[in-house]
Length: 169
Image 1 (cartoon, rainbow, N blue to C red):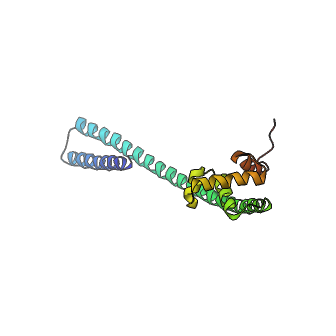
Image 2 (image 1 turned 90 degrees about the vertical axis):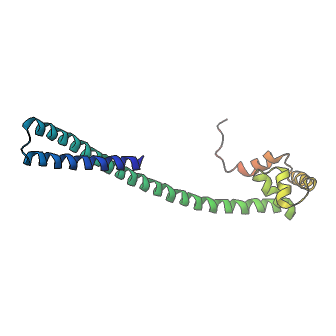
Image 3 (image 1 turned 135 degrees about the vertical axis):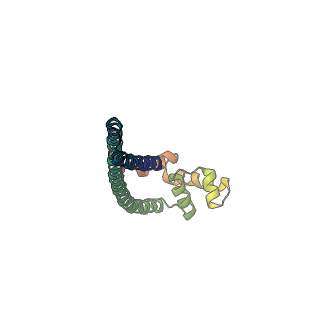
């Protein structure tokens, strides 16, 4: 679309120049009044259209620059938020691992616990850890027995409960 707009603007400018040259040539050769007036009107109209096109192009360029600045600001905010979030998540991971140690989870159970919290299925966890599905099922059951929690959702809720604002219920 931008290329089409530039092409039309270039053609419009060329049209203005050609009409102006023709008008000048006709005037110098003694053209009739009506013909010169009509070409003069055509020159004014095409010149006005060319100027309007230039204004639109400049406005579009300003808008593009403004949007580029906005995008850059959003990118900077995203990177800042991402950095802050990574620090918080690193601290949360340390706290979760500390709780896993408090529950006396083995290293394998700790790995499974983290993957459960991330939302992986037991099959996906087995594939990630390159173990059998049955082993992963046993390890997850061992986690629930050692923690006194009944399910993955209770495990996740244990860690999320204090992170979320209190409910109004």
